[in-house]
Image (cartoon, rainbow, N blue to C red; front, side, top):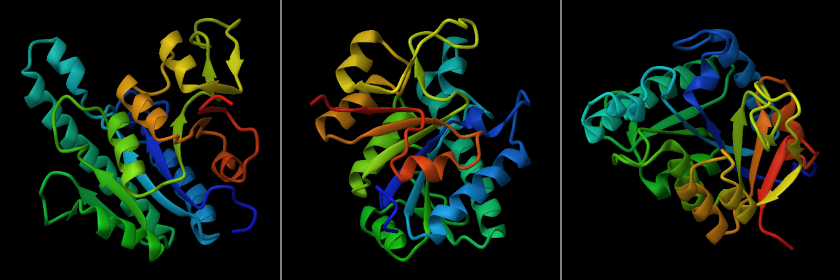
Length: 240
C-alpha cells in the first residue's frame, strides 16, 4: 500500500468501453483484462468502487431524441447498467475478488439496495463495490452518479476509463494533430467544453476538490500506474 498515492478510488467505466471493438454488448476479453488489473490493486489493499454506464446496451438520451419519453428512456438505461454491473461482478469473482452490486433501483433478487454506510463498510472489508442503476433518477447521467458516489464514500479520486490515453483539445481519431493535456483545471474543462465528464459531474468534483484521472483502460497496467501517481493520461484538479 505504501506505493499507492490513492487508497480509496471510484472507477468510472462507460458502457461503450466494455464492448471493445464490437458494436454492441460486452466483450469478454475487455472484462477479463479489467478484472486482472483490478485484482492487482485490490490484492494490494486499494479500496475500489465502480460506476458503469449502459451505453453498450441502451442509450437513454439517444432514444429520447428519437421520440421516446426521456424519463422512460433513462429508466431503461439504468436497467442496462445493472446488466453490466452483474457481468462485472461475475468476472471479478472468477478472479477471486469479492464484490457487491448495489442498485439505486430496488431489485433485491440480484443486487443490494444502495445504502451509503453499507457501501463504505463493504469497501472497508475489501469488497469491490459496484454501484448500479445510476442515481435512481432520470435526467442524471452515470458521470454525475460517479461524482456523487465518490463523494459519498469519501473516495480520493475518480478514475475515468476511456479508449484514448487522456484528454485532447480535439478528437484524436479524426484530428491526428490534436494535442493531449497532461493536466487541466476544472475551470479549463468547463470553459473549453472538453468532454471529460458532464458539467454536473465536473462542478461537483470542483466544489469538493475531487481529482479526476482520465486514462486508457485498454493498456494493461495503467490502473496500477495511475494509482501510484505516475503520469498516466490526464489529471483534472484545482489550480494552484
